[in-house]
Image 1: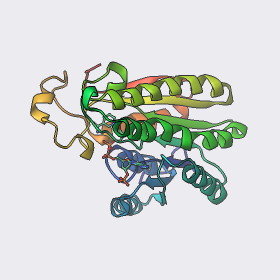
Image 2: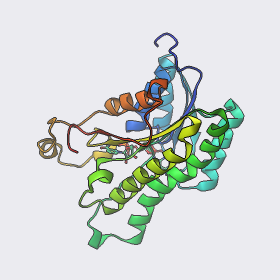
Image 3: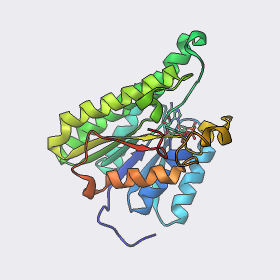
Length: 247
Ligand code: NAP
């Protein structure tokens, strides 16, 4: 672990921290001396692995199981953080799913489950966190959107709508709370090597990416950690693409 850095003693929550991008963000935040709450939905074994990895690096973290689609459970989780740590400084809305198919075949449940997780999940988790950040006059909120939300992706009308919605919510909320020194930004990853992209024709897709390769979760985490820093205090309402040049 590095020596104590300027951003210390902060409390962070990363939703969907059991695997993939959320795991990399959680580890990167713990490496910079934040206490990190690791949210997961059902994969406790993977979440425990993230926790072990952080502890083996000398970092501090705790598990926090809840489903971001459940408003009551999400709000209870934020209350737990505040009762245990007295505050929440950093919120990373990363939990997300995809359920791809052409619009003509899409059923209401394929639409609703993706919107509920990727967009309503943001609302469920963020409202009480903002309430805690306001009087402290500090906060960092980063929403994990996607290039699909920026440019639209065929076969992902539900997913693209959810991620575009997240960009709108990011911009609107940033305006509401900028004066209180709380920044709200989105990152929009392109194709990142995680379980989410399993089954995609990687070599074929890589040819369409200017950088010629998929990104890594750690490359997304690096941008998120910067947005969490005090140095990024004048960046708000922005969407940072991490996509090898696709958009
Ligand atoms: P992943 O490997 O499939 O991991 C998804 C994570 O979200 C898991 O930790 C999962 O928890 C959690 N999760 C799912 N539904 C949840 C719910 N209802 N409540 C709480 N947690 C839930 O996905 P990823 O690739 O790391 O994606 C992370 C984020 O990046 C998503 O928002 C995704 O849309 C976005 N993104 C990914 C890519 C990419 O290429 N991979 C590109 C652009 C954007 P469990 O383990 O408990 O199921």
